[in-house]
Length: 190
Image 1 (cartoon, rainbow, N blue to C red):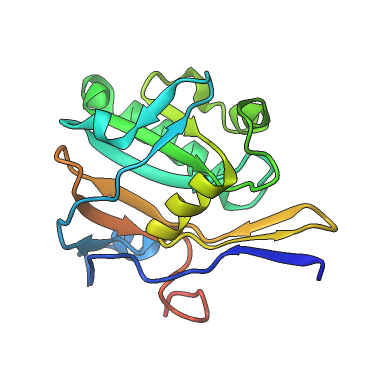
Image 2: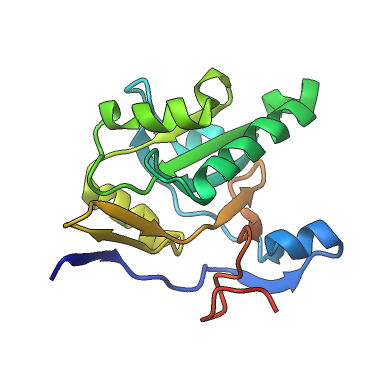
């Protein structure tokens, strides 16, 4: 088959599904989560350094998933991360933005160049694009309910868009599904 399915989607662990009041929260599908611990992982960043989720104890972590070849929601998420970091001002040092690569065909550190160029996030000291061997990425995707499909003929990657907000103790605080409700089979907000 031309289409190879890398990982299936599943509901995020600890999700309460309680919308946070407000129009913006509704737009991005922001829901409170039961504050259980996020599954730890270690991957390599755009500079080849090993980055462990546990090393961010004491900081709020915004965890996103995208790839450099994406021309759909990924550049939008990149722009939102840049805006959020700017809006944080002096508090930006208390927040870390971690993005996990969703391109199963480009898992090497050198394969992250297009993500850095497209998003212009590489200039942010508190942002890291993470990658690793496919088995490790697949484990992270599975743990966080990320569905990644890869078409071997066209080398097209399709993935769902989920963001997690972790508190300073590495626990889930919020989950967002920008522009679509990943919990609905239709993928649309109603």
